[in-house]
Image 1 (cartoon, rainbow, N blue to C red):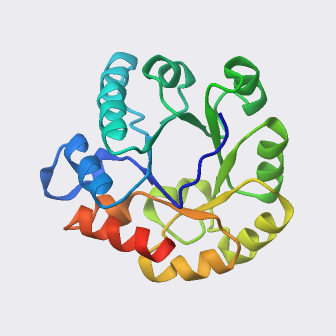
Image 2 (cartoon, one colour; image 1 turned 90 degrees about the vertical axis):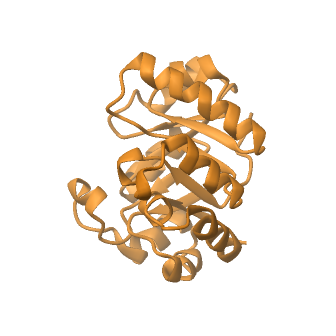
Image 3 (cartoon, one colour; image 1 turned 120 degrees about the horizontal axis):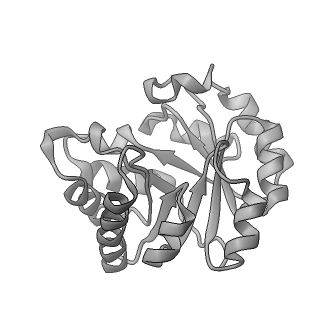
Length: 208
């Protein structure tokens, strides 16, 4: 199971959803707008709650022929038949996950530098996210933005797809794509929109 193409990688955060929608409803709106890859990333849920939500997400992504990734928990990804797992720099190392899951899961890895990007590729990642490219409240703990120069450097040195993440708004998509990004990963730009479906549709259109 290798990386299957998508340009917009939508990461969940139910606390950022406007208008008191449930996460399932918000994700369905994004899928209706053309999103083809969802990462379930609700870090505060316990294992059983996350598993229950993951099953719902799997049913939803199947309905819209989209891919499902689970943040950090490759056991849950395997349990619900997800397409992949997304690892952070604090997760079990990518090579250990690759040895365990073999080809059953696509593996994405969050990176913040060229060194981490190279390490992820070497360890067996199928794609990476790199950021934060721009300043964003959700990524302040990861330090200063890496900027377009680092993005350019990373995309020039590794062969797996690189998704730019962090503070990317619709009008900056062209800049990150010109810097070599394969696609963009977004959270608040879509889930914080008044019309999630329409916002997703516009961004998918820009990326294609």
